[in-house]
Image (cartoon, rainbow, N blue to C red; front, side):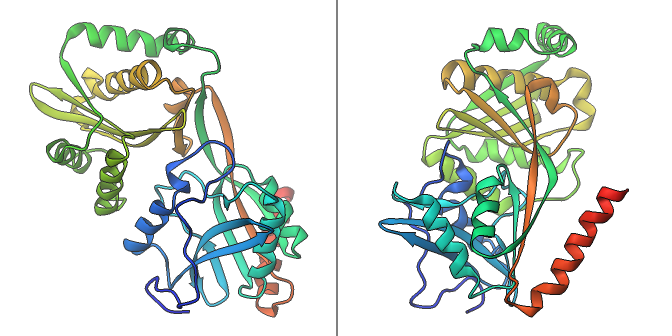
Length: 331
């Protein structure tokens, strides 16, 4: 293997045609993994693990944490990681072949965040891995079902609806919604984020490149709230395959009395439901209390740790992982 994300000549990259099962997500596209790689998130190297069953191939982009130690190619912006498929044939067989092949390359594999661990866990065990799966985080999302915007809004807590009604009536906050990337608006977002309650986090260059790419694909939805012409709250969403994804939000602390972030959220929810016609809204990872006000579904996220019993190097870490699990059950 070569460092800095470079591949051997016979390595193959995830093709742009590969897709995950179920609803599409920005975190399932080849462009997303290329973006992570370009911005230094591939660790010591990147491996696009693959396995075939007939004409169907399964793919799983990974980073090398250390020799023999692999993990899903994700970062803090990733809502989840799941296998991708090229072809509609025997996907289960292709995934099994992928994990069987990985046993020739790795002692340990970690996947996080995983929204639905069952198929991955079954395929890993069938391929001979020792597997430990544990809840590790939360996701809040909105399942609209047959609800339109007004029905969904009527189902929200009274305190939230009253806040939006009262603050909107005062006319203090001006809301701007954008569906195309605008450098000036992005600069306003970065200014708000720098002055927000959030600690230094993230990777601004990656986020901007992601926003520009999503805009080029027609998927960007962005909002800026201003008071007296000054930007005080900003949100970055995308829309794809009937789902709106809420990526980042920030507000200036001393503007809270006017609730600009709440008004901005209400405007964006209305837009994606009424204009874009989404049926789902995904608030990403994290169990922040305010998410419950907007969402009606709460599921755990999972961490999968897999250990290769044919590698002595995996035995110690496997023993520690199972011991941790037993200790949690006893406590």
